[in-house]
Image (cartoon, rainbow, N blue to C red; front, side, top):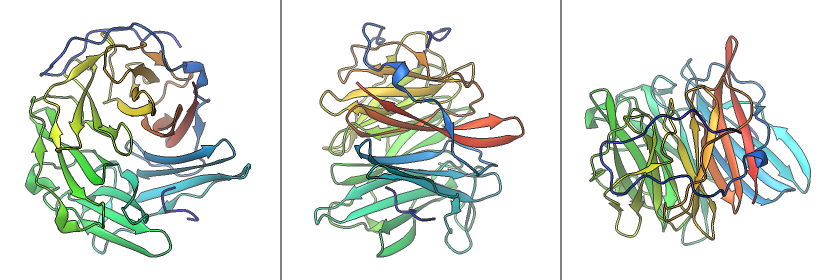
Length: 363
């Protein structure tokens, strides 16, 4: 791989909910995102045998200088990554999918978890990237392994402590998020047929240390979900927003306050009526207003989006992104700049699976 370093109509609606809430439903009031500004879903060439939601990280200076990095786990126990670069207007296209070499004695695969990716810059101005996945096989059942990279300098795998089956987390997806000088892992434990939400964090403002992880902190509201929750940051110095598919299959969100490293203490139901087959992802798309975009897998197996203001009082409704209705997972989302959103998702194409991407350019 050339660049492993990370660079509609309304949905037919039925009620939503997680077990614990702290405020009323956010109803349809106004519009922020414009669904027509999402590009056509485009397949990343190659790959195949993917089994879970891909991870995406992107960078955007302007339309002529931007990049995407996408990683995904497969049903044949591999972790594959690819990237695309547009530099000074020249589009170099997508790299071939390349396997991220795992630690000795370890394999990754969709039987364990989807991958997670992030990037951060420490107080000295040094930029690092992180790629993480649960092990499909190895000596620490379903533990998370984190690859910390400094481009052109070093690349080291770390086994995240207390992250596997022995700690109660097992084969569930998780999120890797950086904000305010901390690296967060937001994960879910399974409780019967449902999932609840936890996080741990590591101070990376000076340097990464695998001994620097905090203990796990459980969601104090006790929310229960049909799928593992998903997290992202409002901005690189902002609170984390956590989204999930409630027991009613609706979209619910909460926050982790980065100042003290605490849960908000409640869940807000987004857009009465929207129902999903997977936990919707969420990301900030307006750095000025901290507006939030959500993207989820609808009950018709298409991708749907909606947007929400930072105070969670205004929601613009659910709209289908493009005509494809063969998706298997909610899109992963990442906003690298104001009014720019990048999406990546898993599709079932006849006898194969593939990764598709879409880009939003607003306002």
